[in-house]
Length: 98
Image: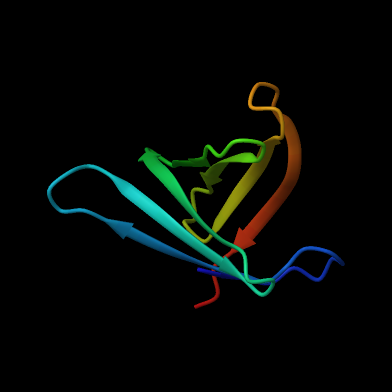
């Protein structure tokens, strides 16, 4: 998945979704134009995709809900900089381009 956001300060990025056929583990590999790379653990239950990265001092989690048309996903992103408290960071809607 490739993302581009017209808003200043939000980098363009690439997400690669990968699974392991010997387990139910799903990983998401993220890279962006700043040179940032991260690995997230993911679950997909019904129409809700959740993924998170727990890292000391900067953890992130995302909850995405797919619309009934399967062409859009609404995502709420949260972060924790103290390993305890979570705050809402971003809210986005992504639309598939066919």
